[in-house]
Structures are given as C-alpha cells and as structure tokens.
Amino acid sequence: MVDYLEIESAKYIDGYKLELTFNDGKINIVDFENFIFSSGHPEIKKYQDKSLFKNFNLTYGELEWGDYDLVFPISDLYEKQEL
Image 1 (cartoon, rainbow, N blue to C red):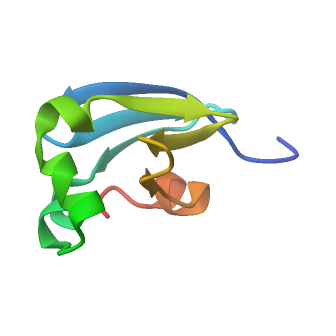
Image 2: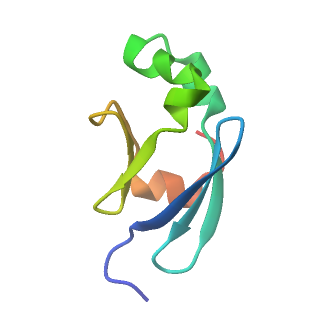
C-alpha cells in the first residue's frame, strides 16, 4: 500500500502508446492516439509529431510533455488504457 500514487517509469512502446509503471507495482499501457488526434488545440495537435510525443518527462512522479503542454491526472493514467 502506498500513501500517494505516482509514476516511477515511463517507456515508449509504439504509435502513441506508453508503458507506465506506478509506485504500487501496477503496469499500465496507455494509448494517447485518440486524445491527440481528436483535439483541435494547437498545443496538443503538435504532439501528432511522434518525435515530439516521444520526448516526454517524468517530473515529481507525473508524466508531462513540454513545459506542461500535456499533463494528465495520475488516476486517469492508472485506470485507463486509452485517453
């Protein structure tokens, strides 16, 4: 049991999928493709470029792109396999 949930590691799989390992041991593969391609916002659409999508960071247990251009609630990443 953990006091708070955070992401310990994130690994690019393929397409727009990442394998996320959480601090309670759960591993989840999340597909971001639908979210990225259905958005009309330019700060999100730019991540259709896979080289930008692959350039994510883990910051204090959170997954983020750019200067927080994209960041998702950890609970959504923990529970969902597609955003």
